[in-house]
Length: 474
Image (cartoon, rainbow, N blue to C red; front, side):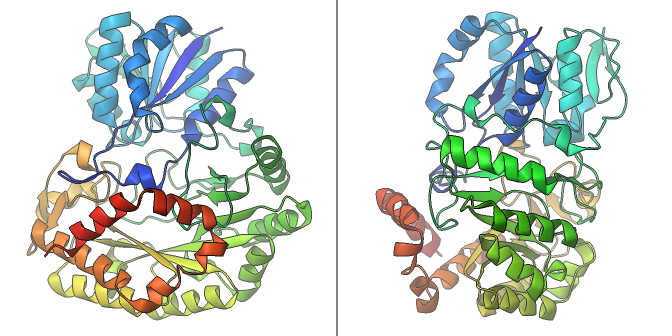
């Protein structure tokens, strides 16, 4: 029997010199660690989770917790922006306890051999899906040879790998994620403001992978496969969340919830019959939607559908978005979602390779022309596992600063643009969007439609007012 403490590092940096608003607006549970913990415990191992994103102050007690738990390994799940923070913690762990470390997550999946070479504090790294590899590490006490792929390890001065990572073909064989291993769940964790009607809420992931090949997406963990849980599995999982934790709303955090139409219709029918009384949000590509499907989502408790629109410039969109649909279709689907009685959120990105001042202006004008209930704008972040990453050097200036790779810092500047121009347009779009009376008026009904969001907003009003002052700066 092996023991592991799984760590979610804080690993965030909003924007230099500005307050990090991400933890006020949204604290998401590390569902991947919850799933891994449940999986290894099924096979007789023991797992504990320390979430420093939810509890930054708990980092001071890390070594004491490890000495009390006496694990065989300390595992770190890392994004690109969180990697260096995790490496710092790992150095401390090894210096003060001598415990072995295991790293996994999207950043590791993209760069495992390089990271193992450059960061000696990493004893083992897992690329791809982590369940079978982590079980193998615990089964074998971290000692090769490994019979499962995806494990990177040291052989003297060399870095070795056990082969390609292995995917679980049937996701229903997974145990439900163990949310109970998160201290303070669900109250400590917060969904994005105004994204839910009733609290408490949480996230769930009902599928893995995406068949599309958008240039900006990192597919190093799941690749282009697409697998999903059955409706029966999901109803049991969601019922447990409702009964054990009182969950009222779910953010279904799939890359593309509506990829398989019949699967979505089956799930919606099961949810409508279940009597669980849950509402939910999901993400979709616009071409997957029609009125029959939207009505089924609404009957099942659908609240908001997010559309990855990305750009209001057709040439930028066609270059980077796999099988992109035209802007007219985007607009038509937004109207269809609203007609079905669902809220619609548009997701946009600026600063992609090939972006120009003219394309930035087109994106701004397109956003302001749409009848969106919410929108989210990010700055293109060059993730190492994205297909466009290797060719960025000829497209502009790349700032390879992992700590700032969080979609709010301009780390890539396309030829012909400047960081200041991208930042100015970013602020202008947000400022002009939220200055419009009809947009602000949509938040009035949220007093009774999402009262918990308003309470959170009022409690943190000074911070939000500071953000407003920042975005009014020219």
